Length: 252
Image (cartoon, rainbow, N blue to C red):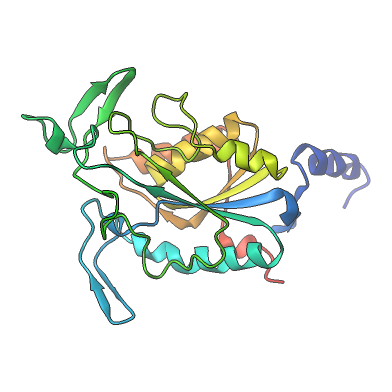
């Protein structure tokens, strides 16, 4: 390392709250880091068979959605083994939720409406209904390492993409308080979907002053409207979110 780079590296270590990047390897203080696994649920995944049990295609299946389980399980195990925090979020809607197209006669999936203070809410197919098979986590997602499950979207009149806030951008889920209680300063994200719940979670994490990274090999997107995945990735990167792969995390 050139001598002139040393002060810069020191400042970077402090400014990035004890997470350092050097020669493409990461040294993480797991005591101040958390992994957030976003919405890896059956309704967001294609049909699959696990442990001899078959699951139909989810009502909002994301192409390749189940593929995020393997890399996320590996990272979660590393976090848990080093006393890092692992959080999983779960869409948890009541029947007839206001974000469902079926709750609005004459509307169809993909239409946009205003829901109270929330403008341009997209209408979705019924999904992740409380207690349903579709709301369950993907069978291949190992929850043994998870410290906390955040259920969101339970308000029948308000959707919730972000792990931190509902879509009114004011009602909190409690995640920020949990992370601050454990002095967490850096978060790593993976899950579904890149252009919705992962995107909003990452942007809120930056707004709340967490150093934020997204595992690009452990996310999959909806891409509706067309191009939304590319736009989301560009917006996150432009906001300062780090784009890395799970292989960048040290193996030992």
